[in-house]
Figure (cartoon, rainbow, N blue to C red):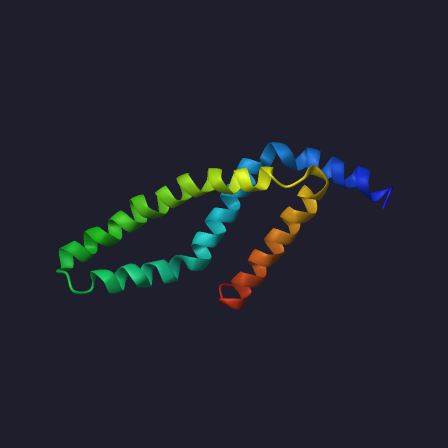
Length: 110
């Protein structure tokens, strides 16, 4: 363990400046995984409305909804990542991406 700690600290030092990009990658990946469910839910909500309302609803969802989710959720995810102690940052990020990959596999995204 004594030899592993310096490596983990070095990896964390390397990862720390990139937490914003890591958070963005996590949020974007989650939106891809759950996008079909989000679209389906909005589609059900808009079904009783006329075609143009449904069309504009979908445009708003895609143009503004997903954009807003990305813009506002990324800093929240980054703040959560920054709360991870430095020693555990690198293993936590790796584990998180593995879990997201397993989630994608389970939801038949890959």
